[in-house]
Length: 360
Image (cartoon, rainbow, N blue to C red; front, side, top):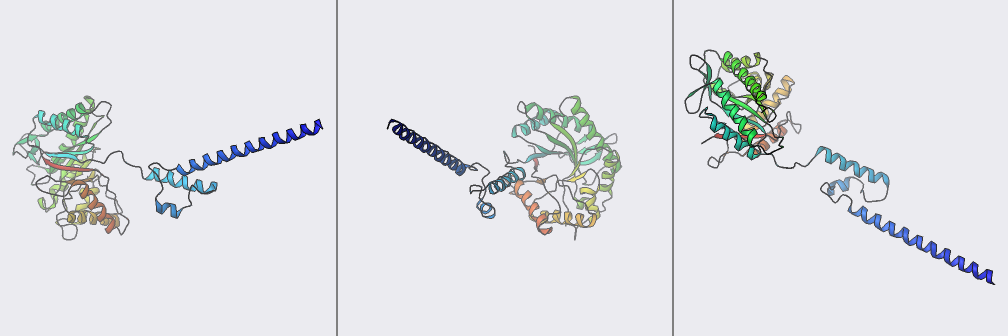
C-alpha cells in the first residue's frame, strides 16, 4: 500500500513536469511570433507591390524568409537613401582679380556646404601685347597669372571656412568662352590656359589646399559665337596638346541643336567628348535645350559608339528672371535622354548642378 502511494505521487510529479514544459514551449512560440511580426518595420520595409510579387518573409518556411531577406539586401545596396539632398554650387561671372573678394566667395561656398564643380568665368580670351589672359566682365584685362592668384585666394577661403574634419571637395574651374577671342593664336591661348590650370594644382599642393580643392578648366562654348568652328577647335587642340590631365568643362549651348544647328554633329561632339579632356556641363535653361543635348548624346552613341560623360547641368536661375531651377533642369535632361533613348538612356547625368550668376 505504501509502495502504491509512492508510485501515484511519482506519476503526479511527472505529469506536473510535462505540463510546465508545455507551457514554456508555448511562451517561446508566442515570443518568436511577435518578433517575426515586427521584423522589417524600419526604413527599408518592402512595398505592397513587392509583398505581392514575392513570398511574405513572415509566413512559415525558411526558403521564403531567405528570399525576402535577399530582396531587402538588394534594395539597400542599389537604392541607398541619401543623407541630404544635393545642392547647386554657385558659379560666378567675375569682375576683378583682387584677392579679397575671392577669399570671401570661397568662404561662402564652404559655409553653404558646396561640393562639386565651381566655375569662375573670367570672360573671353584676350592678349594685351605681352601676356595672354581674358577680358573680365568689367571690361578690364586680366593676365593668366593674376587669374591663378585670384583662384588660389578662392581655394584658401574655401578651405579656411570648412568645418573641422570636413571631407568636402570642389573642382575649381577657370572659365573662359569662345566669344570672339582677341588673341594672336587660339591654339596658344588654349595651351596657356592648360598650363595655368596645372600651375594652380601645383600651388594647391604647395599650400596644402589640395585635400579640398582640385584644379580644372572650363569653356562657355556657343556655336553662334564662332560659326566657322576654327578658333574653338584651335583652343581645344592647344589645351589637349599639353597633356594637362585636368578636365575642360564645356558649359555652353548647342544653338539650334544638331539638325538645324550652327555646327555639324562632329564639331559639337568634339567639344563635348571627342577631345579627351572635354566633359559637358550643358546650359539647361529650358526644355528645348534639354532636348538638344539629349539628341546629341543619342547620335554620339549611335554614330561614334561613345557615351557622352555629362558632369552635371548649369542653370542661370535668379529670383528675378524666373529661369529653370537646377533640379528641374537636371530632371528635364534625364527625361529627354530616356525619351530619345526609347527607355534606355544613351548617357547618364549625375545629380550635380551649378547655378551661374554675377557677384555683386
